Amino acid sequence: MLSRHHLARVLSRQSRQLSTARPLSAVKIPSLGDITHSPQNTATFKEKLAAYREMLAAQRKAALGASAAASDEHGKGIVKSILYGSEKGQREEAEMERSYSTVLARGKYMHAIEFHHVKPDQQQAYVELVGNTYPNIAADKGNNCHLVGSWKTEIGSPDTFVHIWEYHGYAGYHNTLNRLSKMPAYQTYQRELPALLTGRRTDLMQEFSFWPTSPPRSLGGIFELRSYTLHPGNLLEWEQHWRAGLAARRNVMEGVGAWFTQVGALNSVHYLWQFQDLRERQVAREKSWGERGWSGTVHRTVPLIQKMESRILVPLPWSPVC
Image (cartoon, rainbow, N blue to C red; front, top):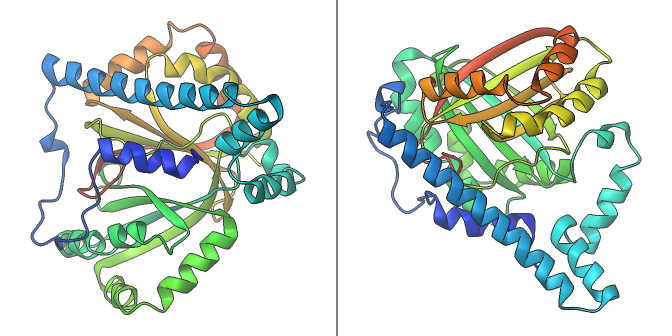
C-alpha cells in the first residue's frame, strides 16, 4: 500500500538522509551567507524542482495504474487506500468530517509549529542539542510523528529557530509525548533546553485541504515563512479565495505547506515557500502579478488580515525538507 508516509520515505532517499549514527559536534550554523546568487545556482535549483515534481507525478501515475489493473470494486478499494490511508484511517477521516475544521483541513494529520527563541551566545550549543535529539525522534518508528523540517531565521527575528512536526492526529501527539517522556535521552534534552532559550511557543495546526505538506526533498536555497493573523470569523472565506488563487502562485513559486492554527495563536495562518535566493524570490513574486487570478486573490484577502509577518529561513543540517 502506497501510503503518504511510504511516499515520504521513498522521497527522503532522494534527499538528505537523517543521520543518527554520528552526533553533531561543532557543526557550522547555516546562514544566508552560505547562499550565492548566480545563473548556475538558479538553474540547478530549477532542475531539482523539476525532478521532484516529476517524481511526485510518477507516484500518482503508479497509484492510478494499480487501480486500473484490478476489478472495479477492488480497484476502488486500492485507490481509496492509496489516497486516504487504511480502512481505519478512512473511518477516522469520516469521523473528522463531521466537524467544522475539516471543511478546511486535509486528512487526519495534525501539525505542530515550534518557535524557539535562542540566546545569541548559545546558538551553537542549541544546534548541537537539538541536532542530536530531533533526528532520533523522527527516525524512531515507535513515535507517531514525522519531522517536516527545522530552520533558523535569518531575517525577521534572527535568534528564532522554527521546527514543524507532523503527527498522526491528536492521539498520535499524545502518544508521542507520553513515549518520549519516559526516555532518558529526551529527559536530558528537556533539562538542558531551557538554559539555552529566552522563550518559546508551540501551536497546533492542521494543513489546508488544497495544499498537502511536502514530503522530504532537497532543493537547496532559502525559505520564507509568511504568517497571517486574520480577523476572527474569516478563515473559511480566506480558504475559499486562496484555493482559487493558489494555482496562479504555484506557476511561479514552490510551496512547502499551508496550515491554520487550532490550538495556540488562533486565527493564524502559516504558509511556507522555497526559493533559490532572495533575488529569485523577488522575480517569482513579480511574475505572480502576471498570472491570471492572482490579483483578485490579493484584493479579496487583504481586508481579512489583521496582522502579517514574513521570516526568511535557512534549513538546519538535519532538516528533511531542505
